[in-house]
Length: 288
Image (tube, rainbow, N blue to C red; front, side):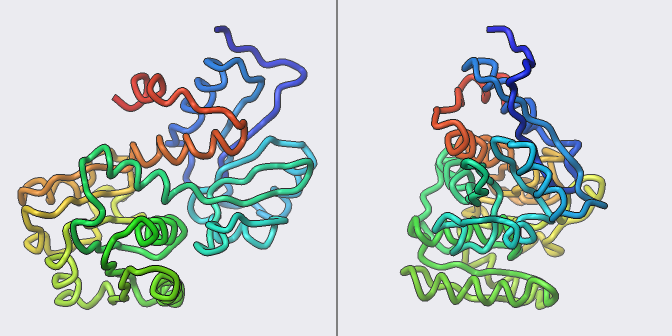
């Protein structure tokens, strides 16, 4: 099916910084083409933008919706009309739907991440999880993992702006699920080592190791890796981060964030259109 911009074409977009590396425009625009939907999707870097003014403009332009990446997943909350129950619990939004001028915030990061673990053959009930970070994506992953049945969760975070969020996240999980969550300072290397060695799953949900700082890693001592550990990195640029390379060198299974991106996009696509994204065709064309 051909794809053509018309006078009726509606816009959707990604907000955040950096965004030029994103595969989302290819994924969504190809899906629109395959299904014959008169939508188009672009990326807008918000590094120097007034987010309030940008959201107001997008509403006035009657966009069908938009995605958010770092650092806008929490900043967006005050500009939305409503949050889904999951987004409210997580405290962050990565997908917004425009419903007749009302902007409704959702969060599909955790859904995408959990589906990607299925691709890796990982059983979430098999042991504890260590999660690096407590930002928007990390919160979504933590909440969804707890809801899906991970028995214990070690949240490792730096003492700084998001330290309070890390403790709030642990409190929400401990109060609303059967998962046992605790918080560890990333600077306490002996405690970080204990958390990782206690776990069967290690997830980096920080931006440490993302291009252009690809030589960085959130785990300074890779000797704490063990062969029963699955190491996942939500970063997909570069596709082979230092964390993944060192994990594999120590005998661990490892995967990057490409399939998380695919599956969170699948969930967002359904929120916007009410239709199923042609996921297998998109996976074959962009993710193989």
